[in-house]
Length: 375
Image (tube, rainbow, N blue to C red; front, side, top):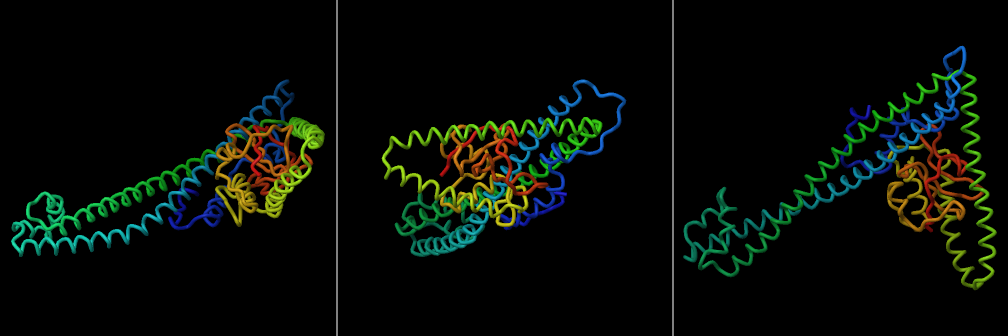
């Protein structure tokens, strides 16, 4: 699959993410598999007392690990995008810089030859036009009777040649990063497939009755988290109402309008993508991963966010789940490895996974790591 795909080093952004995403989508572990995609279980005469609890713990761990793989893939994609952009710039600069250095070498050779003809330097000047010209030029400024013009040109030549070498090193480094990122993505694909197989194996070990019990317990846990977030939001609204009465109405109005305006724009953008595909490494416009959607949504509102969920977790200011406002970013799992946007009413909009795509979910559907106010 991914190992056999060779991406054009000049293809970027959404198109590249879309192609990679198609190969990965079929193998990704999603919450749909864990919660609702139950398969027919093996029949056992009697259930182990802790079978469902053990399965729930195993599936939760697998899902957490799968989201980490997702985040690692996004990081690899971000590194790949950055390196390809840098390489394109370096290659463009290399073309002009090589031509510039070649022209300066030719000019310097002519000047050195002229100095020789005028008796200023020895026959060694002939080396300028030979294969050893570089060695000669490196000693040129130490020779006596060399014209000041020749010395000045040589110093400029040295500077431009050093820049050429820097560009060549940068291009080589970028190519190494590109290869490493692609290799990393191939490894992550294998690991993702293994996690999916692990989840299916756990589910297949349960009877139909145990699967139903597991689904009920997972749904109840998600609802409990959603209820807690909703209660916290109501408490926060009461607190804000009380606090606002003590502040200047004009200042409060100005601040509120500005913040809600940006948040409204970001939310509208994210909601407009509902039903669209989840794409590994996707930054739009045809598909997004979780952090890619948040970055694009807030960019539409004039706010620049970092690329990955881990980086976004350091953006803006930290807020507790008791102080969520529409537009805030809510982070999930360790890492954190997943992110969605709070839209009010105890809900988030997010790029969930390849199976579910971009959708609205309960804010408590997954274990919350933290939240950030970025608008």
